[in-house]
Length: 260
Image (cartoon, rainbow, N blue to C red):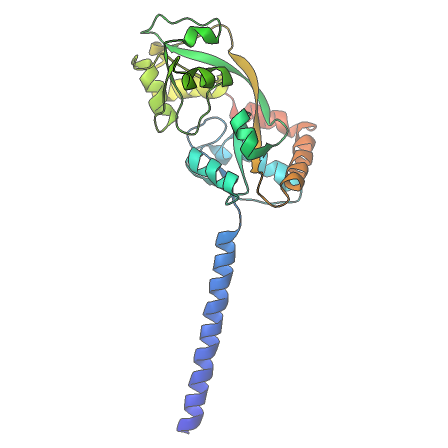
């Protein structure tokens, strides 16, 4: 009797151990799966406090779904997400403007959207904008994980302007509003939304002339296996959405606030 009980107990323990090991392997496998990530505080495009996570979050998920892939989106700090994509830890991130540095690290999708960039200036500075040269000797703000326009980045590297890099966009807007920085450059939708949310409308003025027109993209790290195939499928899904009424419906729903 004792012998049979001991054997049964050993068998039960072995079964439990096998079950736990299997669950651990499955958990490790799930944890190792690449994720789709984006950053916070970039309304109306992305944000964990926005409906559907923002316009770009909804658009990217629907484009992947049209290509037969379903991904959840996780919100992480911009730099952590970008570095994770470059290293292959994360599958993809969005939305990003093309820059030479980024093109060395990642492959870019077809444009998610084209937007105009504007120069947002403090009412406490005499700065005016007609071209990049107007930034010489000025302080420009771009949060960690945000890229300066190529010309301004080159000027910052040469010491011709000073770049401030606070931790988030709201801090950047308030630095300009209080005169601690002269300006920031951002697309018309995110810029206007950020100024409104920061409650500093009377302290920020917008240059009449756009800085540039740029496109925003999804990026996949060059080291990611099958990166070109992943992007090709995504681009097919994106094209299908743009050729239907769904794209314009999403755009109108997420950008209800007037750009300027």
